[in-house]
Image (cartoon, rainbow, N blue to C red; front, side):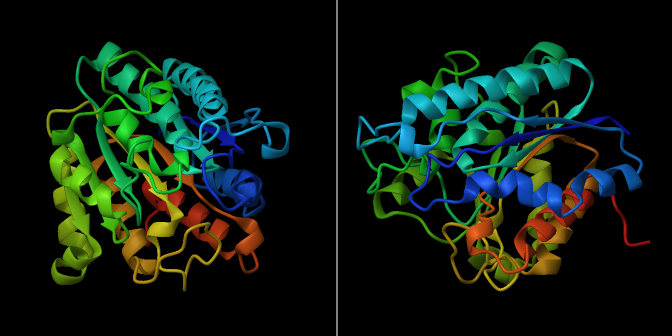
Length: 303
């Protein structure tokens, strides 16, 4: 089993609701490191990256608020995660808001291309599409834009991290659990030609069928799969501590089965668990679930 490097990113500049900067601490308090060690992983906790707080910064552009500060954090994450790949480890990134995934996915993509000569597969597990641009976003919150930056050119401050070219291709990018898209974002998602499994499709087909197809789409012909897991993909009944909850999400076992199927594929390169907001949680329930989902993704079995 590869070593696991835990990287905390206490970033909350990307969203409108405060508190996700405490997510990395909540997951550590839930026993992530100890439970990974019990699973047989060699764990190195690389601590938290520095991230500025909102009170010390000014949102200069209302179309992409705090984008320069977010880009600086993503650049640092890119460097730290890339070093973990060089060390032969699996980067495990704890958020923090979802804008941080620009740094972790860019690092995984760079490793895939330079070390394996293949593109990266991406599973974006989220209630939202995160494909807004500064021109389409109704809020200007950058945590709704990271997938757009990874696939294309905007916001440019994020898109250029790790090189000017796109970090992932639509053919190897899969959205899972989507159920809340902004009006103009819907067209962006359609036009992008990424693979999308909405909650309607999960309800109709079942999570096992969807997860197996998603892994095949993201994993075929690639160096492996990065999973970027936003805890708001889960139903608020099992994950209440998220900044943008949306009813009708994955239940407890559906979330675990998705991660178990990822583990069975042996294709996981790296993993984000983001948008845990302890100020909205109930007895650290969401952080505990996030910890359990990491364990499932890294091979913990029922029997």
